[in-house]
Figure 1 (cartoon, rainbow, N blue to C red):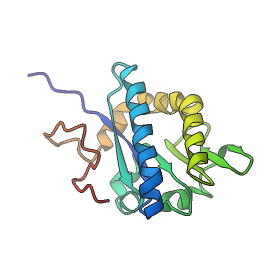
Figure 2: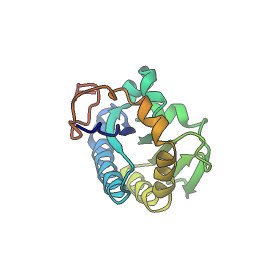
Figure 3: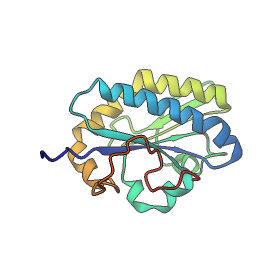
Length: 171
């Protein structure tokens, strides 16, 4: 039996506050679907996309080296708060929303947030239209090294529908 090519992992990180769970997590699943659709259009780019909690991302070093997109503002997402001063501002509109990322994508890290959920939705749509292809190009260009970083790479399971990579849907 031929060895299956290992997939890299892209993380979508949301906050754990009630507001983040109600508004940002569903938005993360929308973005997950958009990324998966874009990946299907790119044969040979083996990536899985998972939604994880900010506290998990911040406390597990193995996750911190993976391509990550933070959704929700610094008031509801601890990762967005940490990246607020670390990531350059790529786009901001009228103090309503922003997209933070290194334009050169030296690190595949993006923070998308708005002053409220409708503004965050607009920011996500703009990210998909303007920046997602470049983000996925970067991931594809670094696919071999990224797949080696996948914490589940040695696992026998092929449960790509499992959005909680470490087995606990509560975080």
